[in-house]
Length: 210
Ligand code: MLT
Image (cartoon, rainbow, N blue to C red; front, side, top):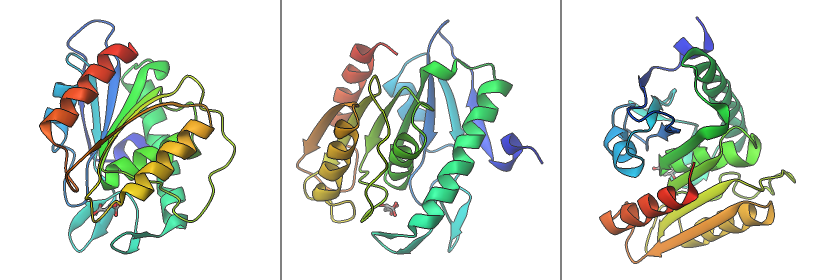
């Protein structure tokens, strides 16, 4: 089985010539179809690459193991994120994508994984729009990677009981300290993606000019 086949996935080619590619990473319990509408709303005409997380937690798809809610198995996260990076490279070749114009977007567990891609595999993606995600390595300090030129939108709820706003702010700091251009938006809600945050992310995407 090839790396490409190891991840069940959906690929939708761009409908606008020269459009970037969105890598979509779903939240816990969802699948590769869940974020396709988000992808279309965020970046009209973009190619969509949407894999399914390979970890099974009581029948729910995830990207990496956790010990309990909010406590990650960081070793597993590191290993699984490397596998996912391999998938992205294989898909880039197989679907003839521009490796410089891949933007990751994820929700919750997918946002944490997208943050892991940024911090552990710098240069794999040009940017990220992450919703309800936080610092993926939790207690560990990420390495001194170079992220200048990487553009990131973060959308988080100040009342989120799962990804606390402190974890979201820590992620914004970790990315910014490594040179990423971070636009962090905090909303009053919880573990969700409110329509006005999606609207702001869409504006950010247009301005970023991927
Ligand atoms: C996680 O990655 O575990 C998220 O923060 C929470 C979830 O996916 O339910």
